[in-house]
Image (cartoon, rainbow, N blue to C red; front, side):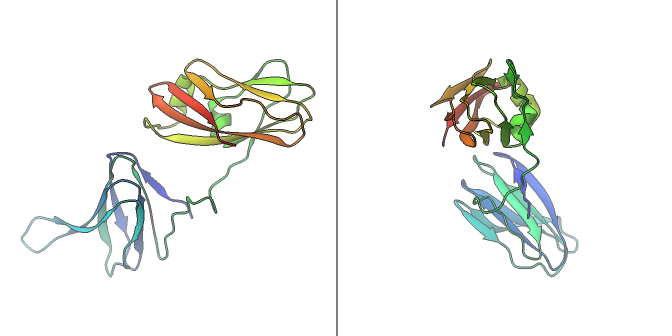
Length: 203
């Protein structure tokens, strides 16, 4: 139930097997074409749909076909299958193993820790946990300016966990958890420029 991403203003050429469909979702105008050909003529692109703030699902293709997606400013998501689904509405998403950071006097979250989406630590006293640098976040994956990623920090000890900034990363909102075991702080990290991120406290 995963899906593929076309980054902003990008193009994807997708092979769809016979009997399967393609589903495309985007918030900005995204054009979806089917590549068609006729004997003795060059191949052409037939517009199937312009997707904007909605989800488009094709009919099942009788024959294997090539679909071209030209994404708009916000990029696009797509999936292929007999009954393809793009599950980015919060009801289903891929979740790897959370990152657990050992309790200690100098606690630093790596970019890999952040990208798991969940960071835990069993505190024995109030601690600070430093975010990775903006440069390290930028190196960790392919971020476009304006893209974001959510990460939840959970303290498993009954002590305050304070999230602190690093070079190229600033925090907007409260940066501490409650001094209760199981308390959480959820942030949305948004890339604003090369090697530069803002972590917004969202819950």
